[in-house]
Length: 163
Image (cartoon, rainbow, N blue to C red; front, top):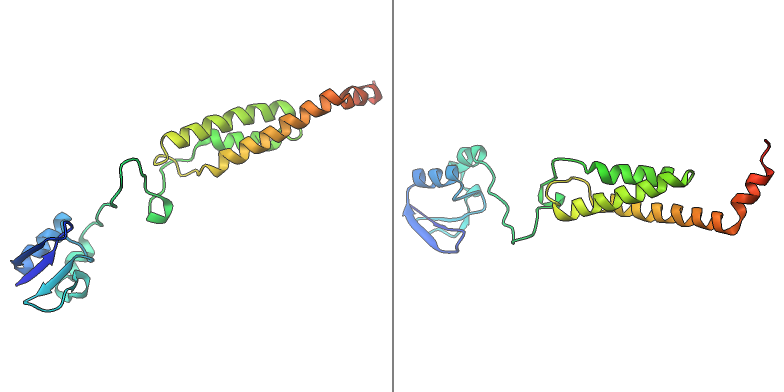
């Protein structure tokens, strides 16, 4: 007969090995669940060979989460989709270094992408780094265009262009 320590840190048992297999199948116990066989030292169920088959076929337990905290890639979760607004914003911001209207569009799309990722981070595999880079590069491109236009360099270039 076995005793186990549940997720609530309470002891359960004595129970049979069949009962423990049922608990593994239903997700109430897993390989890390501590168990003791007839007064032996406590050790994880994964160290008991009689439960190896049950543990292999059992689905992994859900990750414990605090309210408002979403799983990260390090915890084994990646979002299901790329945030297309953030990626398009970054691409257009980079292209905007040569053509300033694209930088403005890229800046707007990057801001929208950042807001979408912030509102539902569990949905997107795209990190906040992508739209933030788009915003920074877009701002630099727009500021550069404003500087060129206000300094008179643009009008000087236009005078020297062949007609």
